[in-house]
Amino acid sequence: MKQSLENLNIALVHEWITNVAGAERVLLNLHELFPKAPIFTAVFDPKKAKPFAKLDVRPSFLQKIPYTKTKRELLVPFTPFAFEQFDLSKYDLVISSTTVAAKGVITKPGTTHISYCHTPPRYLWEPQVDPRASKGRFNWLRQKVIHEMRIWDSVAATRVDHYIANSKYIANRIKKYYRRDANVIYPGVDVNKFLPTDQDNVKDYFLFVSRLIDYKRCDLVIEAFNELKLPLKIIGHGPDKGNLQKIAKSNIEFLGFLSDDEMKKYYAEARAFIFAAEEDFGIVPVEAMSAGRPVIAFAKGGVSESVIDGETGILFPEQNAQSLIRAVQSFKSEGFDSKVIRSHAERFSCERFKKEFYEQVVSIMEK
Image 1 (tube, rainbow, N blue to C red):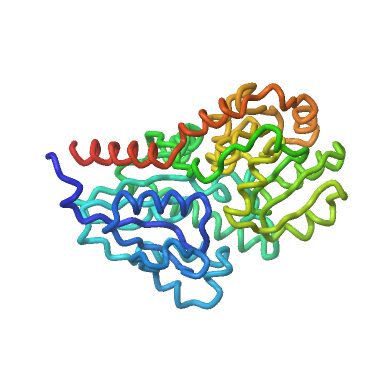
Image 2: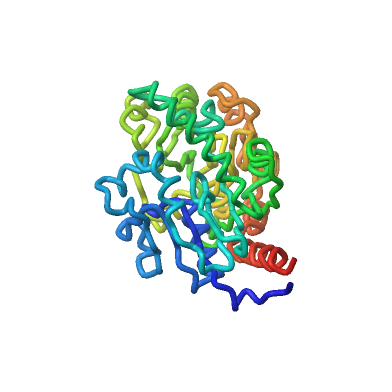
């Protein structure tokens, strides 16, 4: 039966809101589409997630437990139970934005649950890509928890009525691990935030922007640039920063955490942007392209869908330092047109995302 979305009670569900990274930017786009919808989440830190401070955010009981806002890894084993406790019985439509447990909310038979899946949990299903859950002390306990969470994750995945994936790469993983089909809608990127500069203003350095954690492979990038001896600037922070600084040579500069306004100049003036992770989609490479800069990236994951090899960047085939070194050595700035790169990045705008997502929801609800 045809329904008007304006007349539906809609709820948004998101893992946790303790900073504003790529998934949270997608959530803000979803809230712009459905401004009356409350946001249910495990924990909320309005000081570190300021764009959400005045929105109707409803955290779970985990909000009252010490350290959960700053130590997200402590949350993971408890999030399944937390999301199952939310009472969503009055909502006609629930939209979850999920990487871990938000898809596990329980809805009534008459409620439609659409899940925008950023990824099935990497550390559960592909620890070779993201080893965070399998490394560290108490390994026997970690393995037991991971086993139990895999079972729960498989069950929780069946509670979703319709999946939307953020890339073809993730749609394939949803098919593999959950045995479900997913339509693909690429996430929105604020392409107007980062703009090209005159070619004469481009400097000699390469740029890497990321959280400094294992699977982002900053170590690989440092190893390559230690050998290349070319200028590299690293923007970001994270638990691996200290160890990474120890292995980096003097041609590598750590700039720490910077605001978007501070980053504009670094994006626009870099020779090229470096991306070495096997990522679900990869918003930062699109930000770099919106500034007209080519991207040198590992040819696997969502970035292989956003970067056109030879036109908006270079894709290197193996996730190791030597493969990256060969790509950087083959890179010639004059072979890339910043206007072409910028025009390509505009295909991933927030406006495009919101239009496609709204049309998809309407199509689902009209069936």
